[in-house]
Amino acid sequence: MQGDSFVANAVIHWLVVTLRPREAGGNSGHGEVLPWTPTTLTPLRLKRRDYSIVCATAIKRRHYSDRTEDTYVHWIKRFIYFSGRRHPELLGGEEVTAFLNHLARERNVAAATQNQALATLLFLYKEVIGKPLPWLEGLERAKQPVRVPTVLTRDEVQRLLGNLRGSKWLMASLLYGAGLRLRECLKLRVKDVDFGYRQIVVRNGKGAEDRVTMLPASLVEPMKRHLERVRRLHERDLACGRGGVQLPEALAHKYPRAPYQWGWSFVFPSYRLSVDPASGVVRRHHLYENFLIRGVKEAARRAGIAKHVSCHTRATRSPPISLKAATTSAPCRSCSAMRTCPPP
Picture 1: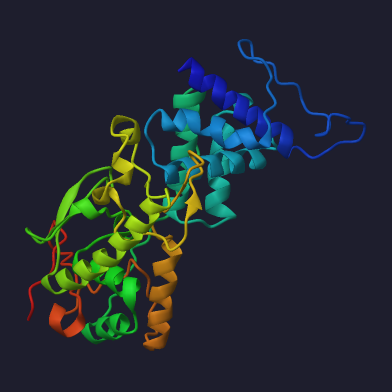
Picture 2: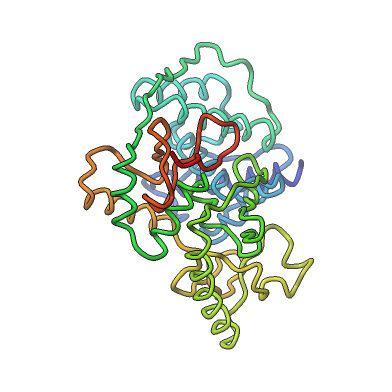
């Protein structure tokens, strides 16, 4: 906990120093700043390139996802900006309440956005700085209205998928036919596709839990043909010395040869090699999210669908769709588990 507190205070001090506007007479490169001298810590000015490493330490020790890390850093920076670039140790419940009320009143954010900011500040003060916030008196919670979901009809799903080709069609078919989320589809590994049982194992899904969903029968052959092309790409990368993939957590240290094995390869690899920001190794990652997001939006435009269509839009309350007719089927959201609805 002391190590986390030191890292957090160092990062926050760096933010306070670098974000404060330059004042007259300042010759330090960042202007004159208010002194920050906690009793147990020494003021530390970090270089910009060291910021991401230091800021991630406290969060990574708790095995939070990369998305959570980026979100927490974003809200901490916004809180510092709102509070006049003062160090959070000098602030308390009143400033936190004022910031959250500002989000609800002036910024008119959704309830989920305000809750996200609240969770970030609770984590900052309790888990990192070590000073839990008091009860936030006067906190105005953003209202959470009941929204009617966007629902596609059977004909709209057929037209949407009919305007997709190649990997985009296969990925969209998995989203609709197997009930996969976007990130789950992108991070799918070859070893988790079981043609014998016609099922897909989703690893580290929402809530860091695994689950099993079915592989639609009409997607078996297209998936096999797709994996044949991916395997040729994998073998070509191995021949060039670039065949390794990123493994979750510390599995690369436990199984040094696993990154080069076919089973650990991504089902939907990127078309380009890229540098892993964590290790600096040049390797082939999975496809970027915008590859499918933009493809689905463009397919909806070509299909003439006026509804707001995204990768999260489902045909939930429409009649079940046959895989033979529409190349996919809608996940049955009324059931507890995501599965393909039976054909009509």
